[in-house]
Length: 184
Image 1 (cartoon, one colour):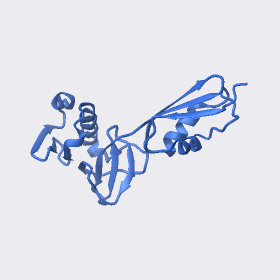
Image 2 (cartoon, one colour):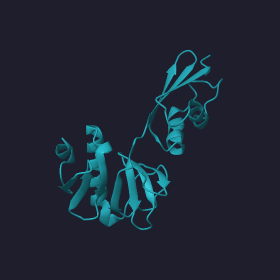
Image 3 (tube, one colour):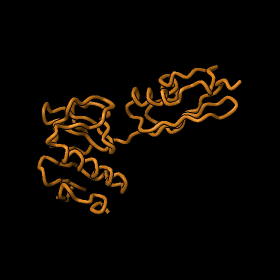
Image 4 (spheres, helix red, strand yellow):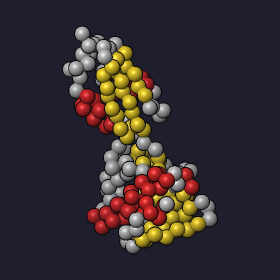
């Protein structure tokens, strides 16, 4: 009873349904109530870096439903130490290393601490304020749908965030600003 016969995947666009099923480790015939959903979710989030959230539900009697939410790329962060570019989500997750910035919004002024795919944005201790401000700004911009029009964000100074927006505006904000209010 309650064996997995069908696995449904929803919300995926970057990864194929089969890739997600393979990483989950769930196979047809597995007992649905003996599966450790939390281990499966942790494994999927660790191996598939573009996944932001995963939920697993049982559809009795024999269907396992995997619903995924994928990260959206907010921009590329330049590691000032070595010049590498890293794709970053609005939540601060490093998605992958890039050779060039490409057409993404460019974030400059940070020195990344041990960057690797799937980890959160980490910087040197003296840049924690800039990093936190950047994450708050990215989140506010994403919630208002403004990420697509920004060309660059510079957080190199300890007091001001400078953003090039819509190809014609230079926006300067205090590092301690209420970015949600400013974006509104």
